[in-house]
Image (cartoon, rainbow, N blue to C red):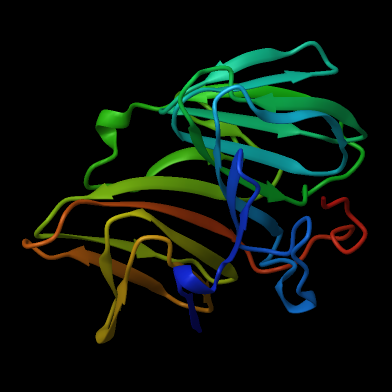
Length: 253
C-alpha cells in the first residue's frame, strides 16, 4: 500500500520564533489515527529563529535523531555533552532511562532541521548522545545511509532496526529502492519534486516539496526527475513493520 500525504495536509504550527510541520501527533496536534508508523512516532520539520530554541526539558525511552539542513543547532544535556551541528551533521540521542537536554539556535540566521523520533528496540537503556558527519558530495545518485543500527564511518548508530537515507536526484535521472519482506518505508521530499513509480512501472505519482509517502508491503519503488526539473533532495526511512512494546505508553511531547 502506498499512502501519499500532501504537504498542505500536514499540521503546521507558527509560533513566530518557531515554524514547524508535525507529521505525527505532537504537542498541540493530536490525531489518534496518526500516532506512529512502525516505531516511527515523531517527524517534525522545524525552522528556528536565531537566538531561540527549546530550553532544558526531559525525555525518556526514545531514540531522537536531528538532521540539520542549514544553520546551526546547539545541543547540551545532563550527561555532559555539548555540540553544535550544521548541514552534513546528524545528532542521535538515546533518552533511555531519562535525560534532560536543550536545543537552541546559537547563530543569527535561522536553523532548519528535521527531528525524528523512534521507540527503541530495547527499553531501560543508559542515556547516550553522539554526532556524526556524512559527506554531502556523496548524496547525488544514491541512497546514502546517515543513521543505521550499527553506526560506523559517516553514520550515527541507533538502538532500533531502522536506516535513514538521504539522496539528491539529478535532473534526467532515476533512482530505485528494493524493499525486503516485513519492512516499511517512509519517504519525504525535502526539496524539489520527483515522480514515484513501483518497480514494475504502472501508476506514476508526482511528489512535490513537503509531500510524504508511507509504504506498507511494497517490493520497492523508483523515483525519477525529468530533465526539465530541478534536483530533488529526498529522505527515506526503512523500518520494521511493527510497533515495539512500550510505544503506546512511551513519552511523546
